[in-house]
Amino acid sequence: MSSDFEAYEQDFGTLTAEITNKIGRIPKLAGEEKTQLVLNVDKQLEEVRELLEQMDLEVREIPIQSRGMYNSRLKSYKQEMEKLEKDFKRSRIAYSDEVRNELLGDDGSSSESQRAHLLDNTEKLERSSRRLEAGYQIAVETEQVGQEILTNLHSDREKIQRSRDRLRETDANLGKSSRILTGMLRRIIQNRILVFILGAIILLTIILAIYFNLRGH
Image 1 (cartoon, rainbow, N blue to C red):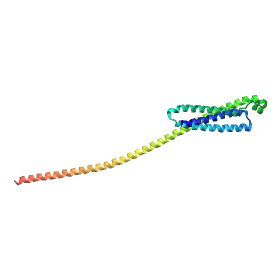
Image 2 (cartoon, one colour; image 1 turned 45 degrees about the vertical axis):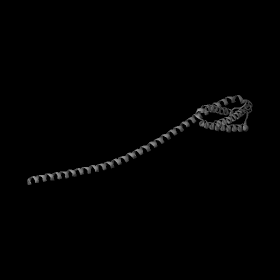
Image 3 (cartoon, rainbow, N blue to C red; image 1 turned 90 degrees about the vertical axis):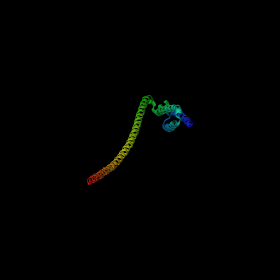
Image 4 (cartoon, rainbow, N blue to C red; image 1 turned 180 degrees about the vertical axis):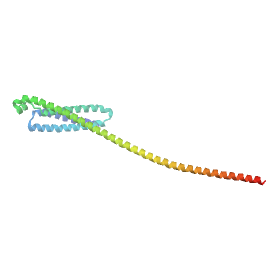
């Protein structure tokens, strides 16, 4: 797995070296030639972003005891990528002295303040973009948390419903058992009454028999 990461590192080094060289050439160009080189660098930067994504995935698969070292290397590559992107943005609005004089003639000195102002605006846009991206990430995470809460609530609702069903079933069984016990108790009482009556009749018969037997003597 680490061999794949190292292969990505080699590709990263090759690509970033090419991009750095091209970024240095951009201010020296103008017109269509500059546009084509900007497009080429932009495409290569996208390739570097994809490489970093692959490296990130590889790091997640590396055993945890070795992951720290690779995370540090990946972090430095991401920082290098951020620097390349900033240099690229500056290079697109920068001109060499020769090109600037050719484009602006005697107005070359005033363009310095315009370029500084443009760079300042670019930085502000970058900061706004990062804030928007952070806000979007928070919104996504909030949505995920909300979805998890809804899922848990749905699961809890199903558990409560199952408990209610079992309670109703238990109540029904208890009611049925109560009716059965009541019927059994009623029959027991009836049987005891019958036994008592029979016993009383037998006792009365014995007493009468003894009484008449004594009178006969």
